[in-house]
Length: 399
Image (tube, one colour):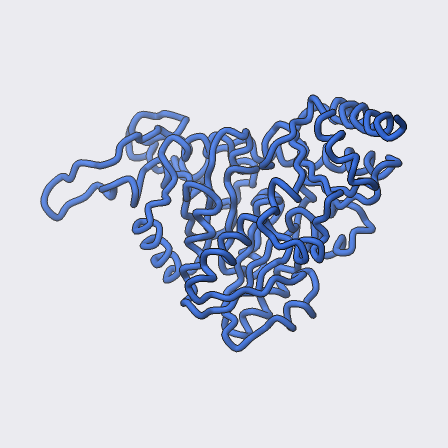
């Protein structure tokens, strides 16, 4: 490849989000011309000589495939640095180590139950303390503030109650008190929301979800722009070893290429199904930020470009839950979210069982709550499946 061709491998300023998602940071491999980023399935790399390096020494620290992915996610999230981990929980675990033991963090109360378990059950042993509050209410955030508060961790929209927290206002608040704002952007992805532009210090993702998009790999990300924090996180990643593998990095890069068209379809389908659910007699309430009567609808419109593919709803009767879950056929009863296939989940048992009952109920996670990760299938097929499942619930109740 000549030098001119090499210079053309990097996107220029002004490219749209969809173009950046398709091509990533490098348009093609400058050595071979490969359009698909090569999988550098190597644990170690040869040194040219003593004190010399190609820039790649050991894959736990830096790998060419993972590096392409990290630069691509940083580009999409409007950040300077990206770090890829072997899971979303690996990324979150690295984030908390930026805070000194004894620090206090304010947390969204209805975020993913695994995050609660990690922080409360494990990092609580090392002197960290946490307040779990409804972060969609600034009054609740202010009330939770302590002298030792060092960070605010929000998930917006929240999992599974779909509450929306103001990112800009949260950033201004915690920065006034010398802390950091961490935003879990898994539900909307960088396609619909860019928290760093709204003042967040760090963005985390479970890349397993919408970024990968095909229910076939695990990954996690941290994106940020502060060089000092980035250096510390690199050391944490290298030392703990939760780096994303080359093959999983490649799978995630491949998934990101279709992020835009998938997110648009997820969102369209979710709005259609959420509207249909509202009309069903066995459904008590539907939670979806795209409804104009959602409590934070206007805020969502201000900070996000779309509503995403997640829908939660209450059934009127707890006894219908088991019947509904066993009666769906096209829709799959499984954990996780963000893949092309539609999944139905029972948060009480599958995603939020680690959270104490009083806290769960306060957040709204009761025994009648169902969560849908709406895929990209034909929405009428999904509605037909839900319809026959609901009819089965009615028949069971009338026996």
